[in-house]
Length: 360
Image (cartoon, rainbow, N blue to C red):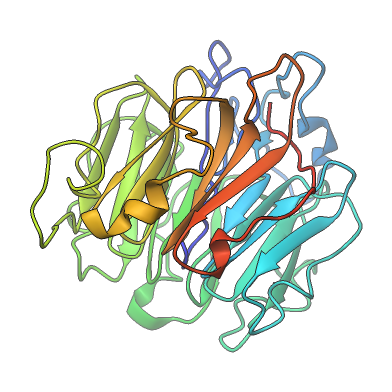
């Protein structure tokens, strides 16, 4: 979503964690905390470059499945196939222009007006608004440590260290930088709320509970979770999705798709989910894009290329008022790192001819 890490996640069939055989976003953001295959690595330093997909699309045991695409509030960032990061859209605080143009990165996250990316050695690089110390210039220092995943909220950032311990920094409002003790596989952030998947696959949430994101967190065993400003969604170990929080739609509507609510999950098996402002965007088994939400969210769910019917999509990132998808619009046999964006704010603009890490 806009004010959080909207990179959504997918998971593999077969390995220790049952993750999908192909690398993914946010979605895989959001977004937005990544899953791991097997147990997380302990330690304070590591070379995560081996966590990039091999020729068969798989990653090593204990590695993080990072996001190549992230949606912020009116802007987006992606990992370029040739290296470096490209951001586009609203640049009010340098969240676009200050992005590192070169270097190796394995995952990216975007908040309201800042972004952070994860290097192969597990260190962070952040840029954009730093009014609450959510994007510190020294994020790569030993003070912050080495991470396997990162997520960005409105004015705070959370990450999971290599040993599974969490760290959040930035604004302390609502207690959102105080995650419950324990080991985590991933963390996702919304505007003022965060949720994490613990090492036992249970979901726990903390921070602002205005829309009951904390008190109504779902029980069960999950692979990934995504948090929007007012709702959250998670995919369980059987690929079923559940959502909770504010799903109210003022103008009524159908029971499915746009015109339903952002928490009315369409039946199906899911690989990735991203909770946006008034909508939920997802990737289903078969690499198809799907989207549902309030009637006012029609533009956020209306792909320019009819993505719900065509193409193979691997990552999804939902902003407050826009959505971006990454994959192959022609569904060809070769990996294709094309990105398509649509919606109602500057984040719906296109990245031109840039080619991103496909996540395939």
